[in-house]
Amino acid sequence: MKKLIKRVQRKKEEAPAPTRITNDTVAEHRERILAGGRRFKYPIQYARHRLVFNTIVVSIAFIILLIAVGWWQLYPMQNSSAFMYRLTRIIPVPVAVVNDEQVPYSDYLVQYRGSEYYLNKYGEIKLDSSDGKRQLDYIKRQSLDKAEQTAYARQLARKLHISVTNGDIDAFINEERNTANGRVSQETYDSSMQLYYGETSSDYRLRIANSMLEAKIAFAVDDNATAQVKQAQALVTSTNGDLAAVAAQMAQSKGGKVTAGQSGPVDMTSKFSGLRVSEVSKMAKGAVSGPLKSTTDDGYYFVKIADKTGTQVDFIYLHIPLTTFADDFSKLGSSHKIQEYINVSDK
Image 1 (tube, rainbow, N blue to C red):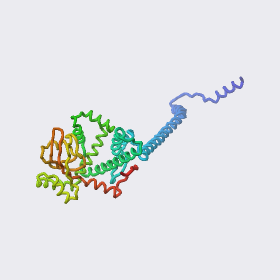
Image 2: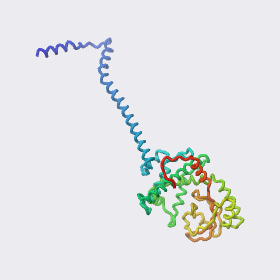
Image 3: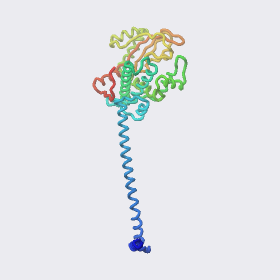
Image 4: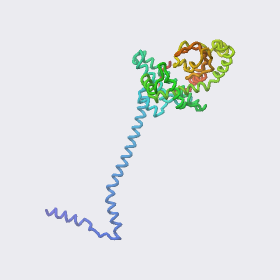
């Protein structure tokens, strides 16, 4: 007990006697109070800085991991899932480079996924069989070639100031909605694209835009075909519309690429090698058309109506193909100006 009393007395003696706060001592008291609080403030600041630093490090590591996983899924694994396709629509990663023009991975996948979906749902062979795998390899090659051609067309389009507008796409779809069973609504058209190809409206509009741009460029750059059209127009007049005779004369001077033939009865709402038969069906029997452009990069047609019913038309045609764009693109491959980032077997 005596020891406890002495300890208390000692603490009282050590404790500084409170001083009265005056104008002269107020600064000293303020500093004493602040000094007592600093020992609680600085450890908290240190922990906060440490937390921010750790968060930044973890975030960077997570982003690097995501990029690595995404790269592995797209390039070595060639993941064509809906998620990876949507991701490539947002992040424009390349699948190849053509003449220094990047080929968006989404352009490749939008072509491949539609064909794969149709083959898987309506094809007669199983995709996990050897024949099915060969078919998928063929579709991959076709899809990648198409995406590379689109990229090359996009590069030329900037130089030639050519573009595809939403109005162009709407007009194309508007014509596609005319069928042998009548005109279908936009909702029915969207549903049919989803049913047959697993595509949303955004998907098939992208595919249509790419195809239309390539066709526009193919027509724009083919001066040889333009010259052949002028020659054909003169010969059609001089031969009284004998398209077979025109083709024979032009084949002798142009290397045999201009051809003539007869369609046979075709539905008025269908297409004939990219040529809209609805345009042909407006002509009278025996009439000969001027040059008609295909909706694809197929070329020009001169048409003479051989027979016509209420729903079908039979016509003789003269076909002038487009070759410049395809030849120029082929030269890019032979000159090693196409670099692909995924392994796809040749045809």
